[in-house]
Amino acid sequence: MKTPRSIVLLPLLAVTLLACAAGRMALREGERIVFFGDSITELGVKPNGYVTLIREAIMARHPNTLIEVIGAGVSGNKVPDLQQRLVRDVMNRKPAIVVIYIGINDVWHWELKNLKGTTKEDYESGLREMIARMQYAGANVILCTPSVIGEKTDSSNGQDTMLEEYAAISRAVARSLGTTLCDLRKAFHDYLVLNNKENKRQGILTYDGVHLNDEGNKLVAREILKYLE
Image (tube, rainbow, N blue to C red; front, side, top):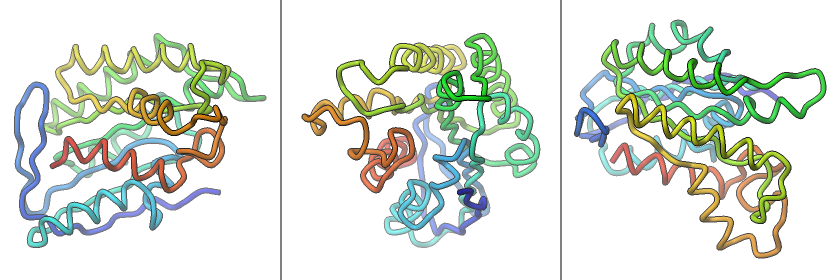
């Protein structure tokens, strides 16, 4: 089921971003944060979603300045889909910060009937092209690595090897372009090693092996907030 993209207004006194290249950045009145991604981000604007949790956490700490937080997630999207709607959903909004959380479908769709994933070459070039355009426009980018396709901790989820390869591409792109990396792949792995002793495929951080449950949304919010606070 698809969730409409939403824009919520966020009171904020001063948010700083630790960016690899630019250092600290203070958000000001009227600026925007865009969360750009697939169905995980589309669902992230729901009441217990990670976008909402981030908004509420910042609002509680900084109650006096107005910032727009925009959820721009579309179910089924991959890197090429984000490229196609980059201008409409990101560039035209002139955000101060863009959080990109993508990569699951780029891998997952290789295994799903009548769908096709994204080649490593197109995945890397697409990320580079989008981030470069955002940076040129003055936005600070937080690039998240793809999290999980299955929650087993013994490398038996089926696409673990490929997913790790795509996460490594995201890490390399962030390093080479000097943008901030939020390594959700590592954060999920570390959490699951401690909390999935029964080696379950789902139910710890996701409800289906991919999409976040309440605990998963909390984890993603905590990780991203490290770079927004």
